[in-house]
Amino acid sequence: MKRLLAIAMIAVLAAPLAADAAVRNYASAAVQGDTAVRIEAGKTAQVTLKFRNAGRYVWRGTGRAYASLYATGPYKRKSAFWHSAWPTRYQAARMQEALVRPGATGSVTVTLHAPPQPGTYTEQFQLAVENTAWIYGAVARVKIEVVPEQVTAASPVGAEAYVVMDPETGEILASKDADEVRSIASITKLMTVMVAREAGLDSDTAVKLAWDDEVGGGRLQVPVGTTLTVPGLLGSTLVGSANNAANALARATGLSRAQFLARMDAKARALGLESTSFADPTGIEVENLSTAREVALMARAAFADPWIAPYAGLATYDVPLPGGKIRTIRNTNTLVTDAALDCEAGKTGFINEAGYTLVTRLKKPGEKELIVVVLGAGTKAQSTRDTKTLAEQAWQGYRTAFIR
Image (cartoon, rainbow, N blue to C red):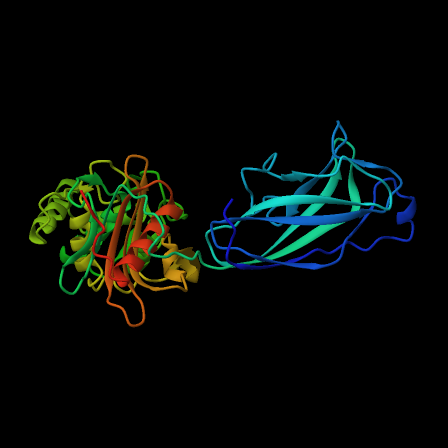
Protein backbone atom coordinates (compact mmCIF):
# COMPACT_ATOMS: atom_id res chain seq x y z
CA MET A 1 0.00 0.00 0.00
CA LYS A 2 1.28 3.45 -0.87
CA ARG A 3 1.62 5.84 2.03
CA LEU A 4 0.52 9.37 1.34
CA LEU A 5 2.64 12.45 1.64
CA ALA A 6 -0.08 15.01 2.38
CA ILE A 7 -0.84 16.40 5.77
CA ALA A 8 -4.13 15.12 7.12
CA MET A 9 -5.25 16.10 10.59
CA ILE A 10 -7.58 13.44 11.94
CA ALA A 11 -9.66 14.63 14.84
CA VAL A 12 -11.67 11.87 16.49
CA LEU A 13 -14.55 13.39 18.37
CA ALA A 14 -17.25 11.68 20.38
CA ALA A 15 -20.81 12.94 20.33
CA PRO A 16 -21.79 14.04 23.86
CA LEU A 17 -23.32 11.27 25.90
CA ALA A 18 -26.68 11.95 27.50
CA ALA A 19 -27.15 11.47 31.22
CA ASP A 20 -28.81 8.10 30.64
CA ALA A 21 -26.07 6.88 28.29
CA ALA A 22 -24.83 4.41 30.90
CA VAL A 23 -28.06 2.45 30.65
CA ARG A 24 -28.21 2.37 26.88
CA ASN A 25 -27.74 -1.03 25.29
CA TYR A 26 -25.36 0.30 22.64
CA ALA A 27 -23.40 3.45 23.46
CA SER A 28 -19.85 4.68 23.01
CA ALA A 29 -17.33 7.33 23.87
CA ALA A 30 -14.54 7.80 21.34
CA VAL A 31 -10.96 7.76 22.54
CA GLN A 32 -9.76 11.35 22.31
CA GLY A 33 -6.66 12.33 20.34
CA ASP A 34 -5.31 13.72 17.07
CA THR A 35 -3.41 11.66 14.50
CA ALA A 36 -1.18 13.21 11.82
CA VAL A 37 -1.24 11.41 8.46
CA ARG A 38 0.52 12.48 5.29
CA ILE A 39 -1.75 12.01 2.26
CA GLU A 40 -1.17 12.83 -1.38
CA ALA A 41 -3.96 13.27 -3.86
CA GLY A 42 -4.88 9.96 -5.40
CA LYS A 43 -2.99 7.88 -2.82
CA THR A 44 -4.18 5.77 0.13
CA ALA A 45 -3.60 5.71 3.86
CA GLN A 46 -4.97 3.86 6.86
CA VAL A 47 -6.54 5.56 9.87
CA THR A 48 -7.41 3.72 13.07
CA LEU A 49 -10.36 5.00 15.11
CA LYS A 50 -10.95 3.78 18.67
CA PHE A 51 -14.22 3.73 20.60
CA ARG A 52 -14.92 2.88 24.24
CA ASN A 53 -17.94 0.68 24.87
CA ALA A 54 -20.14 2.78 27.18
CA GLY A 55 -23.27 0.66 26.85
CA ARG A 56 -24.58 -2.53 28.43
CA TYR A 57 -24.10 -4.95 25.56
CA VAL A 58 -20.95 -6.57 24.22
CA TRP A 59 -19.73 -5.54 20.76
CA ARG A 60 -18.70 -8.39 18.49
CA GLY A 61 -16.41 -8.49 15.51
CA THR A 62 -18.00 -11.58 13.97
CA GLY A 63 -21.42 -13.13 13.58
CA ARG A 64 -24.64 -11.64 12.31
CA ALA A 65 -24.63 -8.63 14.67
CA TYR A 66 -21.01 -7.55 14.23
CA ALA A 67 -19.83 -3.97 14.78
CA SER A 68 -18.69 -1.99 11.75
CA LEU A 69 -18.02 1.59 10.71
CA TYR A 70 -20.12 3.47 8.15
CA ALA A 71 -19.51 6.68 6.24
CA THR A 72 -22.37 8.95 7.27
CA GLY A 73 -21.37 12.21 5.66
CA PRO A 74 -21.01 14.40 3.86
CA TYR A 75 -22.79 13.93 0.53
CA LYS A 76 -25.53 11.65 1.82
CA ARG A 77 -23.12 9.03 3.15
CA LYS A 78 -20.97 8.90 -0.01
CA SER A 79 -17.44 9.48 1.18
CA ALA A 80 -14.93 11.18 -1.10
CA PHE A 81 -12.35 8.81 0.39
CA TRP A 82 -13.99 5.50 -0.58
CA HIS A 83 -11.53 2.68 -1.22
CA SER A 84 -12.05 -0.66 -2.91
CA ALA A 85 -11.09 -2.37 0.38
CA TRP A 86 -14.36 -1.17 1.93
CA PRO A 87 -16.92 -3.98 2.34
CA THR A 88 -19.57 -1.82 0.61
CA ARG A 89 -19.83 1.68 -0.88
CA TYR A 90 -20.82 3.06 2.53
CA GLN A 91 -19.49 0.48 5.00
CA ALA A 92 -15.88 1.45 5.63
CA ALA A 93 -14.55 -1.40 7.81
CA ARG A 94 -15.35 -3.98 10.47
CA MET A 95 -14.28 -3.74 14.09
CA GLN A 96 -10.96 -5.51 14.56
CA GLU A 97 -11.53 -7.14 17.96
CA ALA A 98 -13.58 -10.32 18.26
CA LEU A 99 -15.17 -9.08 21.51
CA VAL A 100 -15.37 -5.66 23.20
CA ARG A 101 -17.02 -5.76 26.60
CA PRO A 102 -18.57 -2.71 28.33
CA GLY A 103 -15.79 -0.42 29.48
CA ALA A 104 -13.29 -1.83 26.97
CA THR A 105 -12.09 -0.18 23.76
CA GLY A 106 -12.64 -1.39 20.21
CA SER A 107 -10.78 -0.23 17.13
CA VAL A 108 -11.57 0.08 13.44
CA THR A 109 -8.89 0.63 10.78
CA VAL A 110 -10.19 2.45 7.70
CA THR A 111 -8.39 2.64 4.36
CA LEU A 112 -8.84 6.08 2.81
CA HIS A 113 -8.22 6.83 -0.86
CA ALA A 114 -7.66 10.55 -1.34
CA PRO A 115 -9.53 12.27 -4.19
CA PRO A 116 -7.46 13.86 -6.98
CA GLN A 117 -8.39 17.40 -5.98
CA PRO A 118 -6.24 18.91 -3.20
CA GLY A 119 -8.06 20.67 -0.37
CA THR A 120 -9.43 20.27 3.13
CA TYR A 121 -12.16 17.70 3.66
CA THR A 122 -14.27 16.62 6.61
CA GLU A 123 -15.56 13.04 6.62
CA GLN A 124 -17.91 11.60 9.23
CA PHE A 125 -18.10 7.95 10.27
CA GLN A 126 -20.36 6.16 12.76
CA LEU A 127 -20.14 2.76 14.40
CA ALA A 128 -23.12 0.43 14.05
CA VAL A 129 -24.17 -3.07 15.09
CA GLU A 130 -25.21 -4.84 11.92
CA ASN A 131 -28.90 -5.63 11.59
CA THR A 132 -29.49 -4.11 15.03
CA ALA A 133 -28.77 -0.43 15.74
CA TRP A 134 -26.47 2.54 15.43
CA ILE A 135 -24.16 2.83 18.44
CA TYR A 136 -25.06 6.00 20.30
CA GLY A 137 -22.15 8.46 20.52
CA ALA A 138 -19.86 6.44 18.21
CA VAL A 139 -19.32 9.29 15.74
CA ALA A 140 -15.87 10.17 14.40
CA ARG A 141 -15.34 13.31 12.34
CA VAL A 142 -12.19 13.13 10.27
CA LYS A 143 -10.59 16.32 8.97
CA ILE A 144 -8.22 15.62 6.08
CA GLU A 145 -6.00 18.02 4.18
CA VAL A 146 -5.04 16.56 0.80
CA VAL A 147 -2.02 18.06 -0.99
CA PRO A 148 -0.96 17.60 -4.63
CA GLU A 149 0.64 14.30 -5.49
CA GLN A 150 4.42 14.44 -5.39
CA VAL A 151 5.76 13.45 -8.80
CA THR A 152 9.45 13.08 -9.59
CA ALA A 153 11.47 12.26 -12.68
CA ALA A 154 11.67 8.68 -11.41
CA SER A 155 7.89 8.19 -11.45
CA PRO A 156 6.71 5.70 -14.10
CA VAL A 157 4.90 6.85 -17.26
CA GLY A 158 2.03 4.65 -18.38
CA ALA A 159 0.62 6.51 -21.39
CA GLU A 160 0.68 4.66 -24.71
CA ALA A 161 2.14 7.66 -26.55
CA TYR A 162 3.60 11.00 -25.51
CA VAL A 163 5.70 13.96 -26.59
CA VAL A 164 7.50 16.67 -24.67
CA MET A 165 8.28 19.70 -26.83
CA ASP A 166 10.08 22.99 -26.36
CA PRO A 167 7.43 25.38 -27.76
CA GLU A 168 10.00 28.06 -28.54
CA THR A 169 12.22 25.90 -30.76
CA GLY A 170 9.93 22.99 -31.61
CA GLU A 171 12.58 20.57 -30.34
CA ILE A 172 11.23 17.23 -29.12
CA LEU A 173 12.76 16.56 -25.71
CA ALA A 174 11.18 13.17 -25.06
CA SER A 175 8.78 10.90 -26.88
CA LYS A 176 7.13 7.52 -27.10
CA ASP A 177 5.40 6.41 -30.31
CA ALA A 178 5.30 10.07 -31.31
CA ASP A 179 4.14 9.34 -34.87
CA GLU A 180 1.54 6.67 -34.17
CA VAL A 181 -1.86 7.78 -35.47
CA ARG A 182 -4.42 7.67 -32.66
CA SER A 183 -7.85 8.99 -31.74
CA ILE A 184 -7.42 12.23 -29.76
CA ALA A 185 -10.94 12.74 -28.33
CA SER A 186 -11.77 16.28 -27.10
CA ILE A 187 -8.36 17.71 -27.91
CA THR A 188 -10.18 18.12 -31.24
CA LYS A 189 -11.94 21.16 -29.75
CA LEU A 190 -8.76 23.22 -30.04
CA MET A 191 -8.97 22.98 -33.81
CA THR A 192 -12.72 23.66 -33.72
CA VAL A 193 -12.21 26.98 -31.96
CA MET A 194 -9.37 28.09 -34.23
CA VAL A 195 -11.42 27.33 -37.34
CA ALA A 196 -14.54 29.05 -35.96
CA ARG A 197 -12.56 32.24 -35.40
CA GLU A 198 -10.89 32.11 -38.81
CA ALA A 199 -14.29 31.48 -40.44
CA GLY A 200 -15.28 34.97 -39.33
CA LEU A 201 -17.67 34.17 -36.48
CA ASP A 202 -18.49 37.45 -34.73
CA SER A 203 -17.75 37.30 -30.99
CA ASP A 204 -20.90 39.38 -30.38
CA THR A 205 -23.16 36.77 -32.01
CA ALA A 206 -25.94 35.24 -29.91
CA VAL A 207 -26.31 31.50 -30.51
CA LYS A 208 -29.30 29.37 -29.55
CA LEU A 209 -28.49 25.76 -28.64
CA ALA A 210 -30.17 23.28 -30.97
CA TRP A 211 -31.09 19.61 -30.73
CA ASP A 212 -28.51 18.86 -33.41
CA ASP A 213 -25.81 20.12 -31.03
CA GLU A 214 -26.58 17.31 -28.57
CA VAL A 215 -24.37 14.29 -29.31
CA GLY A 216 -23.88 12.85 -25.83
CA GLY A 217 -20.77 12.97 -23.70
CA GLY A 218 -19.89 16.08 -21.72
CA ARG A 219 -22.34 18.95 -22.21
CA LEU A 220 -23.23 22.34 -20.81
CA GLN A 221 -26.13 21.60 -18.49
CA VAL A 222 -28.71 24.01 -19.89
CA PRO A 223 -31.89 23.30 -21.90
CA VAL A 224 -31.92 23.10 -25.67
CA GLY A 225 -33.03 26.49 -26.94
CA THR A 226 -30.94 28.45 -24.42
CA THR A 227 -29.30 31.48 -26.02
CA LEU A 228 -25.59 31.89 -25.31
CA THR A 229 -22.93 34.39 -26.28
CA VAL A 230 -19.89 33.32 -28.28
CA PRO A 231 -17.64 33.89 -25.23
CA GLY A 232 -20.00 31.67 -23.26
CA LEU A 233 -19.64 28.96 -25.89
CA LEU A 234 -15.86 29.35 -25.92
CA GLY A 235 -15.62 29.01 -22.14
CA SER A 236 -17.94 26.02 -22.16
CA THR A 237 -15.97 24.35 -24.96
CA LEU A 238 -12.47 24.96 -23.63
CA VAL A 239 -12.97 24.90 -19.84
CA GLY A 240 -15.85 22.47 -19.49
CA SER A 241 -15.23 20.49 -22.72
CA ALA A 242 -18.95 20.72 -23.54
CA ASN A 243 -19.83 18.92 -26.76
CA ASN A 244 -23.05 20.85 -27.33
CA ALA A 245 -21.13 24.14 -27.05
CA ALA A 246 -18.49 23.02 -29.56
CA ASN A 247 -21.14 21.96 -32.05
CA ALA A 248 -22.97 25.26 -31.58
CA LEU A 249 -19.77 27.19 -32.32
CA ALA A 250 -19.24 25.28 -35.55
CA ARG A 251 -22.89 25.70 -36.59
CA ALA A 252 -22.87 29.44 -35.80
CA THR A 253 -20.23 30.03 -38.50
CA GLY A 254 -22.90 29.39 -41.12
CA LEU A 255 -20.84 26.62 -42.69
CA SER A 256 -22.32 23.18 -43.27
CA ARG A 257 -20.90 20.31 -41.23
CA ALA A 258 -18.96 19.06 -44.26
CA GLN A 259 -17.60 22.54 -44.98
CA PHE A 260 -16.51 23.08 -41.39
CA LEU A 261 -14.73 19.71 -41.22
CA ALA A 262 -13.00 20.46 -44.52
CA ARG A 263 -11.68 23.68 -43.01
CA MET A 264 -10.46 21.80 -39.93
CA ASP A 265 -8.51 19.43 -42.18
CA ALA A 266 -7.21 22.34 -44.25
CA LYS A 267 -6.03 24.12 -41.10
CA ALA A 268 -4.21 20.94 -40.08
CA ARG A 269 -2.39 20.90 -43.45
CA ALA A 270 -1.52 24.59 -43.04
CA LEU A 271 0.12 23.77 -39.70
CA GLY A 272 2.09 20.96 -41.30
CA LEU A 273 0.03 18.20 -39.72
CA GLU A 274 0.00 15.48 -42.37
CA SER A 275 -1.42 12.69 -40.17
CA THR A 276 -4.23 14.74 -38.59
CA SER A 277 -7.86 14.58 -39.73
CA PHE A 278 -11.24 15.31 -38.20
CA ALA A 279 -14.68 13.70 -38.20
CA ASP A 280 -16.68 16.09 -35.99
CA PRO A 281 -16.11 19.32 -34.04
CA THR A 282 -16.33 17.76 -30.55
CA GLY A 283 -13.95 14.82 -30.52
CA ILE A 284 -16.64 12.27 -29.71
CA GLU A 285 -16.06 10.41 -32.98
CA VAL A 286 -13.24 7.84 -33.06
CA GLU A 287 -12.07 9.16 -36.44
CA ASN A 288 -10.69 12.40 -35.00
CA LEU A 289 -7.09 11.36 -35.53
CA SER A 290 -3.60 12.71 -34.96
CA THR A 291 -0.24 11.80 -33.44
CA ALA A 292 1.43 12.93 -30.23
CA ARG A 293 3.95 14.96 -32.27
CA GLU A 294 1.26 16.69 -34.33
CA VAL A 295 -0.94 17.37 -31.29
CA ALA A 296 2.03 19.24 -29.80
CA LEU A 297 2.32 21.38 -32.93
CA MET A 298 -1.44 21.98 -33.02
CA ALA A 299 -1.42 22.98 -29.34
CA ARG A 300 1.47 25.39 -29.87
CA ALA A 301 -0.67 27.26 -32.37
CA ALA A 302 -3.90 26.88 -30.40
CA PHE A 303 -2.58 28.10 -27.08
CA ALA A 304 -1.45 31.31 -28.80
CA ASP A 305 -4.86 31.80 -30.46
CA PRO A 306 -6.73 34.90 -29.16
CA TRP A 307 -9.95 32.88 -28.75
CA ILE A 308 -8.24 30.07 -26.82
CA ALA A 309 -5.55 31.71 -24.68
CA PRO A 310 -7.98 33.58 -22.36
CA TYR A 311 -9.82 30.38 -21.44
CA ALA A 312 -7.47 27.39 -21.62
CA GLY A 313 -5.80 28.06 -18.26
CA LEU A 314 -8.84 29.04 -16.20
CA ALA A 315 -9.76 26.94 -13.17
CA THR A 316 -13.44 27.91 -13.49
CA TYR A 317 -15.60 29.89 -15.88
CA ASP A 318 -18.93 31.63 -15.32
CA VAL A 319 -21.11 31.00 -18.34
CA PRO A 320 -23.48 33.97 -18.84
CA LEU A 321 -27.08 32.81 -19.27
CA PRO A 322 -30.28 34.69 -20.19
CA GLY A 323 -31.82 36.81 -17.46
CA GLY A 324 -28.49 37.69 -15.88
CA LYS A 325 -27.95 34.17 -14.54
CA ILE A 326 -24.63 32.34 -14.65
CA ARG A 327 -23.56 28.71 -14.68
CA THR A 328 -20.14 28.09 -13.12
CA ILE A 329 -18.16 25.25 -14.67
CA ARG A 330 -14.83 23.76 -13.60
CA ASN A 331 -11.91 23.04 -15.87
CA THR A 332 -11.66 19.36 -16.76
CA ASN A 333 -7.88 19.81 -16.57
CA THR A 334 -6.99 19.64 -12.85
CA LEU A 335 -3.41 20.76 -13.50
CA VAL A 336 -4.63 24.36 -13.70
CA THR A 337 -4.98 24.28 -9.89
CA ASP A 338 -1.81 22.27 -9.17
CA ALA A 339 0.48 24.23 -6.88
CA ALA A 340 3.58 22.30 -8.01
CA LEU A 341 3.72 23.98 -11.43
CA ASP A 342 2.07 26.60 -13.59
CA CYS A 343 -0.27 25.17 -16.21
CA GLU A 344 -0.76 28.07 -18.60
CA ALA A 345 -3.12 26.19 -20.89
CA GLY A 346 -4.45 22.72 -21.49
CA LYS A 347 -7.13 20.52 -23.02
CA THR A 348 -8.36 17.14 -21.86
CA GLY A 349 -10.13 14.39 -23.76
CA PHE A 350 -11.67 10.96 -23.31
CA ILE A 351 -13.53 8.36 -25.29
CA ASN A 352 -13.15 4.63 -24.79
CA GLU A 353 -11.20 4.15 -28.01
CA ALA A 354 -8.74 6.98 -27.28
CA GLY A 355 -8.29 6.50 -23.56
CA TYR A 356 -7.53 9.65 -21.60
CA THR A 357 -5.76 12.37 -23.54
CA LEU A 358 -4.19 15.58 -22.29
CA VAL A 359 -2.14 18.36 -23.83
CA THR A 360 -0.74 21.16 -21.66
CA ARG A 361 1.61 24.11 -21.76
CA LEU A 362 3.59 24.17 -18.52
CA LYS A 363 6.21 26.30 -16.88
CA LYS A 364 8.10 26.39 -13.61
CA PRO A 365 10.28 29.12 -12.07
CA GLY A 366 13.75 28.97 -13.56
CA GLU A 367 12.79 26.35 -16.15
CA LYS A 368 11.87 26.46 -19.84
CA GLU A 369 8.26 26.27 -20.95
CA LEU A 370 7.09 22.90 -22.20
CA ILE A 371 4.24 21.46 -24.21
CA VAL A 372 3.44 17.96 -22.97
CA VAL A 373 1.14 15.60 -24.87
CA VAL A 374 -0.14 12.38 -23.28
CA LEU A 375 -2.31 10.00 -25.34
CA GLY A 376 -3.86 6.69 -24.35
CA ALA A 377 -3.60 6.96 -20.57
CA GLY A 378 -5.61 4.40 -18.62
CA THR A 379 -7.22 6.89 -16.23
CA LYS A 380 -7.62 10.64 -15.93
CA ALA A 381 -5.36 10.62 -12.88
CA GLN A 382 -2.70 8.77 -14.87
CA SER A 383 -2.80 11.33 -17.67
CA THR A 384 -2.18 14.07 -15.12
CA ARG A 385 0.53 12.12 -13.32
CA ASP A 386 2.28 11.22 -16.59
CA THR A 387 2.23 14.85 -17.67
CA LYS A 388 3.90 15.97 -14.45
CA THR A 389 6.46 13.17 -14.59
CA LEU A 390 7.43 13.96 -18.18
CA ALA A 391 7.77 17.66 -17.35
CA GLU A 392 10.01 16.90 -14.36
CA GLN A 393 12.17 14.63 -16.50
CA ALA A 394 12.59 17.37 -19.10
CA TRP A 395 13.39 20.01 -16.50
CA GLN A 396 15.99 17.74 -14.92
CA GLY A 397 17.70 17.28 -18.27
CA TYR A 398 16.74 13.68 -19.04
CA ARG A 399 17.56 13.06 -22.69
CA THR A 400 17.16 9.28 -22.83
CA ALA A 401 13.35 9.12 -22.76
CA PHE A 402 12.96 8.38 -26.48
CA ILE A 403 10.98 5.18 -27.05
CA ARG A 404 9.87 3.78 -30.40
